Image (cartoon, rainbow, N blue to C red; front, side, top):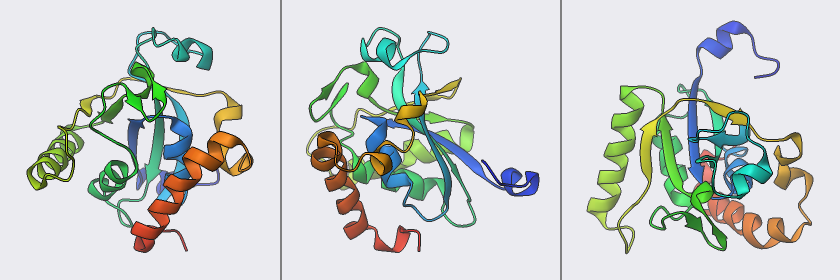
Length: 187
């Protein structure tokens, strides 16, 4: 939270979400009104200070995640989750598109009982509405520790828009988000 005062930081909340490659989630959440910081990283595993190469083996237990700092006066945790479920497939176990392995699982790491209940309620509502053809497999699990990814992963889409993965995987997700969630875009 570079440049924020302690009072501003105290009024913000945190969410940690995994929905496939962290580059995709980061690129979308960077554009969401009320989200003040997005950091790509790793969570949910048992290896301290993992490297990208270790996480890619699928043996660390970690998922690629984003840690979001947001202003709940501008966007609620529920709305954060609504965006989350709109930008990835929560019905595929341990993969998103061509990215395969437990590091790409769909997961919500909750900080408190309120976040846990909200996540479970949103999942229940989505399943009741039958918006997906398969059951939602998103894990809802307590947050323990977050490890920031290496610097070259931060703001990856913004710094590498011509890279193939960015053009063919990330850009369509960002475009879809912009079209479907215009009211949630930063001005």
